[in-house]
Image 1 (tube, rainbow, N blue to C red):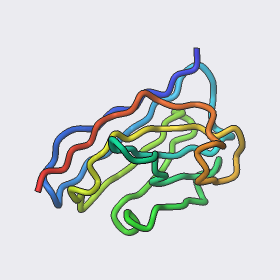
Image 2 (image 1 turned 90 degrees about the horizontal axis):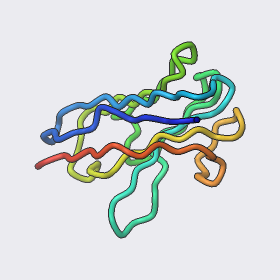
Image 3 (image 1 turned 90 degrees about the vertical axis):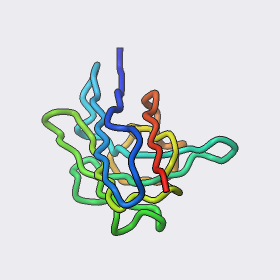
Image 4 (image 1 turned 180 degrees about the vertical axis):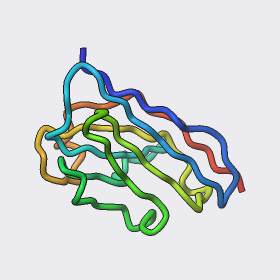
Length: 124
């Protein structure tokens, strides 16, 4: 059974940091693009940061550029999101996803596998 399990969410004050992890199991995603999306109630799911299969090509939402860093450990089948200088606007449920292909993509319809999400709350 293929699973993506996020961890690392929680409550943090504005200006703080969190590191999210996404451990994949059931199959290898070393040749797949992967990414982080987030969603708040009443809004559409938003692409936050994505990375291609090798880890060398990334894309970020404008709102997180310079603050968030996506990375992956292909040997461990794990995706990470380092979030610094957090703002209350970053409060959301964060989802890890794996794409069907290896090229970096921000289109959520290109992602076939999704985790259950981890909640991030940033207090002001």
